[in-house]
Image (cartoon, rainbow, N blue to C red; front, side, top):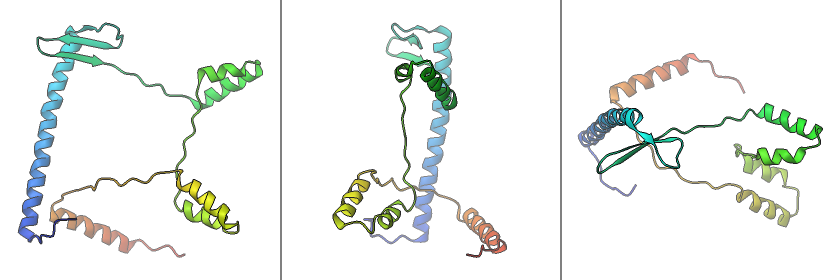
Length: 177
């Protein structure tokens, strides 16, 4: 943090009040926006026409604005049935057709402690081999910093919540290791 100012409790309260008021204003603006969007969508659906070259888009034109409503769709893949079809195409001596129907994608998630596990597992290898593998591993992912989050809660509410959590923790027996 670059701000070196020391804030008094009253100044902190004022900052929190200003933030809380801004959140309320945003919520009210979102409600107004939602109502306006609903009314506009209803008008487009009631009076709109199919936009040229867009089979899923309904259009309503004013003098200054054009409102388009597009209804998208999603496709959920049933992996078990896909594998069944792949097996059946193989049995029917038509396995190449499958590649024209579906694309196989694999996704990976970095596990907790992965770097330590890899370092331990390759510890007995030559140094250049270890360096090579660790270099490849480090290129397997990218770590980005997220924007800081902020929440503002009334002090009395937060203190009650913390008291309840502390009481619950005191009642819960700790697991032995």
